[in-house]
Image (cartoon, helix red, strand yellow):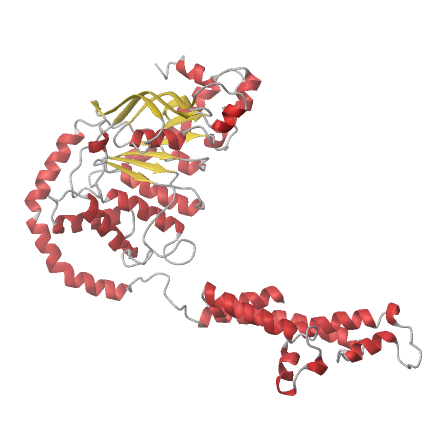
Length: 499
C-alpha cells in the first residue's frame, strides 16, 4: 500500500522536487492521522475525517486489535470488569472488537488497489510541467520545410560548381586511399557519401614503439618497489586507416584509453616515447588538433539548447573562418542526416537521466558535435557503454556511417555483443600492462582472430554461437597465461601477423 501511495504521489507531482514535497507531506499526514501519534480521542472534531481517511489508521488498528485481544493481555485488573487489552484499546479510541482486524486488512488491500489504479490514470491524464523534448509536429516541420524550399534551391544552384570541384577532389583522393574492408558491410554502395559537403583529406595514423610512463606513486614505493617510473604502455605498434573501423580492446587496466589519449595528444603529463606519423609525416599536435575529433565516454552538452543549436555552436567554433554561413548550414544538415538526428533537430538536449534526449541520442549527438568539425580522424571512448542492446546497435550504425564517409575511426570498447563486434574491421588487443597481443583484421565472423588464437597450443576452442569478444578476453587472461605457461605478447611479437 505504501509503495502504491508513493508511486501515485510521484505521478501527481510530475517533477522530482514537487513529488518529494508532496510525498513528504503525504507521509506526515498519514502518520499523524494514523491513530498512533494522535489517538482518535485527541483528534479535533473538524479534522476527524482525516483520521478515517488515513490508510495508516486501518493498518495500525488491525495490528493493535490483533495484539491486545490476545491471551497475553486477557487478565483482568482489580476493580475492573474488562481485560487489560480492552482497556488499552479503549484508551486509544480503538474499537475493541475482533472484526476490526479484518476491517484493517481489507482497507489496506482496498487502498493498495485504489492507489495502483490512480497511478496510471495520473500518468495518462496529467500533462508534464515542461516538455522533456520540445519536438515540433510533423505538420509544423512540413510548413517550415516548404518555406525553405526556395532558399535550398538557391543554395543548390549557387554551389553546383563548388560541388563538382568537391566530387573531383573526392575521386582523386579515393584513388589513393586504402580500402581494406573485411566485413560484409563493405559491399554497400558508397557512391553517395553523406556528411561530405565540405572536403576533407582521408588520413592514416601510424605509431611505432609507443611507450608511456608516469612517476611511481608513493603508495607503491612504500610497498618496496624501487623503480622511479610506472610504465603503462610498453612498445605498442599499429596503424589506423581511412574507411577502416578499428576496435581498441583489452581488460580493465590494459591501457586502452591511455593509448588513445597518447595518440590524440590529450596526455600532457607523464613520459611519452615512440614515433607517431600522420600519413607518413611526423605528427605535430598544433595541426593535428585541426583534423582530429575525440568523443569522450561522458556526454557533456548544454541542457538548455536544441540539437541543432548544439551543432551550430560547435561548427561556428571549430570550422575554418573561410567556410561561409550557407556552406556551414548545409554541412550541419548532412551531419544530422548521417547520425540520424534530423527528426530530433528541435529537441532540447536536457539533463541526463531527467529529461531531454535519451542516453543513446546523447551519444549520437556527441558524435555529431565532433563530425561538424570535419575531422579526418575520430577517436571514440567506449561509445556503447551504458546502453542496452538496441541503443548500442543504433549508435554503432552511426559509427559505421561515419566510417563509410572515408574517415579513420578508432573505438575503445569493452566486451561488445556478437553483432557489435562483427561491425568492426580490425582489432588492436592489449593485455594488462599495456602490451599488444593481437593487431590485425577480424575477418568474416571474426575468423582471422579465432584462427590466430586457436593456433596457440593449449588455448580452448571457441564453442558454436559463443561471443568471440568474450572468448578472446577469457583465453588471454592472466590466469590462462599462467595455466598455459605462455606470454601472449611474446607469441604475438614472434608471429607472422606481427611481421
